[in-house]
Figure (cartoon, rainbow, N blue to C red):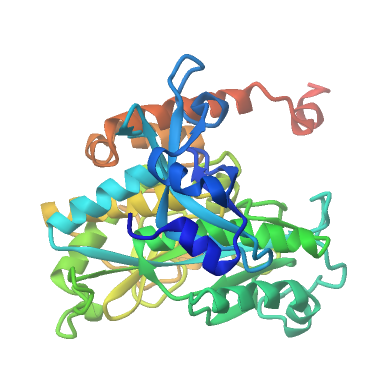
Length: 435
């Protein structure tokens, strides 16, 4: 064990640990464990009934044990006597293959065999709402072009600054916060890191942001499209690949197009090759497709892709290359599972490197104005069912993500789609009652 959690807790004044794992739907689950018991838990894990969360298990399955990763322990800055620790799910002394953090860890190991160390940064967008969740919390936040509105961001200063202070305290190197393109919408940024560390931080950030918002009488949502007509919440990922020692950016080559090396281009080729299937993971809810297939929003643009294209420094495409040695995937949204999002990026890119995939033609047009002129680029799925079908038929990506995970995810997500289809909405009454 790299870190003695009991000693660490004593030094930090921690009384309780939240042993946490993330299920297939992105739900964060935890048990609150007193420090006196933590070293036993660090060996054997905390016991959970996996069926009670969104995992493809039954009540007859043995206990699922969540074994904390000592290196992932974080003391809650807003409640110092509690620490959160990400854990790895184990059943009968074997890693549970469908558990999202295990999927990512396995792919990190696969990349390392190829001499690759993938680093990512995420840009999570979210809304601050009333506690009921039915409207934006700030009634004065109503501008037609609200992006970067300094008055609006200052009205939520207490909440935003508190979270940013905590990120700085945690050493995340937070560097900017802003009001985003929808009224009531914000984004906070911290420095990129290795994919597993980014996923852990992303998970903790969502927990922290929601907790601090509640403390201030607000409700934070990462829902992709909570309001018709407003820009949805994305979670863009900036991706680069490094040597195993972390010293050389394998994506950077100033002699190549846009400063992207041959290996970087192949990794991008894998993203483009598997893009439609990626949507099932990066856009995992029914609501997600209200964002990536949205009509023009009140601000004038959706800022979301609907076609599989790439470009230079141009925000109207699915992938942009804003500078040498990295690229930005603009597909994921706020509902994306922090671990599965990183895992599927890694899986697609790794396949691209192995097969020397070509990303195809680069387009530098404004896709929102001229997208109709692009005839040979695939459209992204129109709904969750189409995305699941694309993932199901992508045999390579399913194998990269793990057959057990893929089968479990598809099974539960198809059930979610069927539940949605059996739901009756007011729209049906309004459009059909008088037929």
